[in-house]
Length: 271
Ligand code: PAF
Image 1: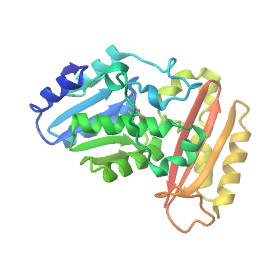
Image 2: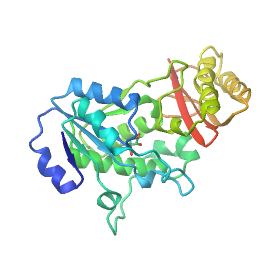
Image 3: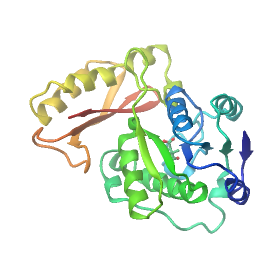
């Protein structure tokens, strides 16, 4: 497995990679959710690339960029064991050199997480656009846990003709339903137990007769957990993310919840 930290070196190396080439972009701190993407990309492609880059542009000024978990050696061991051919792990200066002044805005990014975290998807779309342009994969793999991110990236890839097939893979969960996330590392044992409320609340919404009833059920369920505080709950069209008044089409039920120092998100699809 090759570890590369410069764009020029990646470009000259990538000509030697077999096709189809699968890409798993990550911010590192790899857990089994990431590894499920890596395993699938390994199965479906002749060559496998991963990127590890904690992207400063997608964190707000008061967010956890500096605290975000980093463990490059452990990540490289996992990727090597999973059969990755190449890992691109650039520095922030390599990706955003002095004078960098071009950002990508995607319309669907304004709702939900985009409204709660201004600038977040601008940072995501910009870095993913750069990574897809540098790596030129045939397929790129993302997790359904970040459902809005996946929609933003599909739109970006289609609108800017980036040429990858975007594949969104199912959320991987702990036995109590908590979605795997690098930010789960911020939870102490009591908070970790409380964090199971996210998925429990989402599953309550499944039986609801209307979007409003679903929102009320989720709110009541999260409010009953003293260590959790609900930031938002949404029942939205699964493609446009417009809030729904009636459950007459596939809906994305999503929420953001603070548990201690962690801000956690999760979602389910209701067909
Ligand atoms: O989902 C993530 O880990 C990041 O948002 C991504 C897609 C790697 C962009 O930095």
